Figure 1 (cartoon, rainbow, N blue to C red):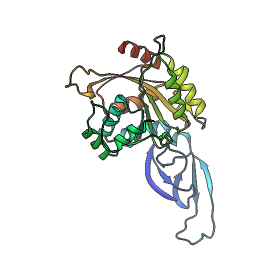
Figure 2 (spheres, one colour):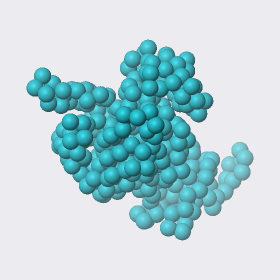
Figure 3 (spheres, rainbow, N blue to C red):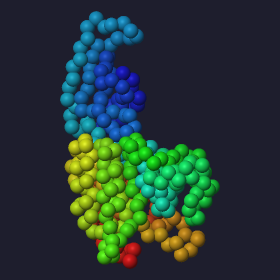
Figure 4 (cartoon, rainbow, N blue to C red):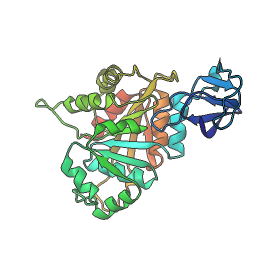
Length: 304
């Protein structure tokens, strides 16, 4: 058993461990799941005899006691902490202008960022520190790469992230209504790579009600781990979901992207709080709405 740090909860120090859940001596350890970063937090504590080296202890006792609920850090608390200390790993799906721009902004804010795109040509271009967009220079790509920005076409690596931003272009069908085909496909694609505590944000101007009617049911039904979308419950098997809508003033080259108006909404207050904490690291003009439906209506107005 290897102890790898400590976390203070309600005045008590809990050891965050990597490795087996068995412990000897007077070391109070917990074991369980804490997302993709390898730290494990759990509802039980193991207490046993102390021994050193390869010498077998004369008597071995393994007593497990249930931890009081108030000592168990919630997934919300864990995700919030790694956003605040900027150790959260951000995965951005779709590397068009919006996705690549956000990747560079969050990379500049000292987050570890990985971009995903099915277009292998885009991936190879970025890997060689070049740009395929006239709005973004090769120098910006190179600087982000130096900070650890990675790119891939393999969505299975999303499991290593803590935050997912999907950045697909808004499409209309023949009747001029939002075409949700792409949103459905990407939602199914990312659902199987989720873990508890994941924050999933859709950077799309989707129609009011689409989050609850389409996105949430797919994420809950297709993740394979029985994860649920948070509903202000703070359960250990939950995801956090929301939408973000931006409106940049691109009429002037002097526009600072950090001044862009960002409208956020989560499926519950936990998601809204996490999104606000994340976006405040790169934007200054943020409005958080009380529901995803209101955000969808506002998005339709902004993009008319």
